[in-house]
Image 1 (cartoon, rainbow, N blue to C red):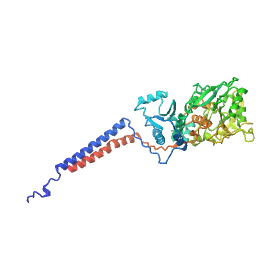
Image 2: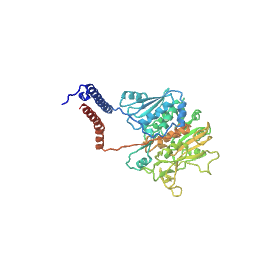
Image 3: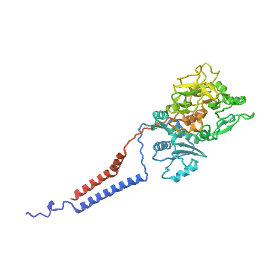
Image 4: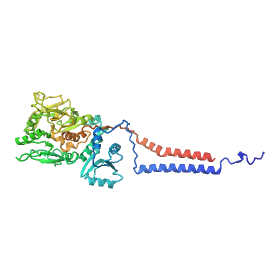
Length: 515
């Protein structure tokens, strides 16, 4: 056997002790780091730390010109308090849109409160704005000076039209969200909290109108009054015109006739006529039960190009089990209803009367041009044989299988459209006052947008275009449906198999190098 020379490389150890220590140390650090990473991910999952990434298409969506104009005009700081569960599907859209607002205006500040992780802060916010203990998933806009507006999550969605039609037809189908109306509501709220003194409005009483403070479901108007004084920032005065000295205040910009059931006196009608002649704004809601006796409003409206004949509107296609109500998706081209038409919304009339523009050859001289806001479907019909509170179809006068108008808007003294010059008269006449009663106004959005319709009517009457020209942002849903067994398998693959495979590979490399 030949002796090995001392300097021969073959005589040296193949794996130096120092190198072995460094490799072993590196592998140990890698294993510990991997275990720490897995532990942290599991800890965050258990403690509800949620990471969200907006996967909306990069379609270059920008804020509308009206929103940019509103943001540029902010003079006071507005705090947007977002009380939202981060796991809610809408949270990413709400948070992302508000951050767009904040990036455009330094006057917008955002405060996000997770009601699950910070119940104390959530309770303080609810108490400060008197939201109620059960309130949740909403945004509060506070402009200081006691001016605040609340936008709830229920107002922020447009739903798939096929699903809503199936729901109205009695089919059991999941309602899918197709659009996000946050910009529409957020911009309106910003404009409202920046206004100075509230706009003055008058609510007429003394003729069997809907009680404005009543919470009764079918006739009470407390929800409508909350909309006027809250969302629309109006100062509403209860008004009686019966006395000789009682008159519509000169600072009143909007007069509301909420379903009178008994006749108005000639002097009262003259005061309303004078109010309109000087550029007033009128919201007239006709009560379904005032048709037989009449209220005197019919003659006044006729002079302004609007007919309210004695007859009910019906729909053989879109009606509920009562067969007296109408669920309408047929909107005119007037700017007031363009958002509902664009979003494929629906409005619910429990018992609508016919309200229509006076035919072209019949309107009085200088009467404004009236436009239909809402129709029945093509399966509409009328009932004008009225006796003892009952209505029946009269073949000699009534129609069947045609659209029937149920709400009308008219304007005089301004350019027909969104903007109105000072002194222009505007009227909105709706053939069913019960559609703004508490129960109808509170119907869920997939089946009825009555609250939006009320909002839009007030906005158009008072020339507030923010609510009329801002459309919804589309929502694209990506859904992965897995069985329980697939979820169980996926959980073990992500939390066990993948980290375990990395650990085994690391240990294999270490043992191989050591040997």
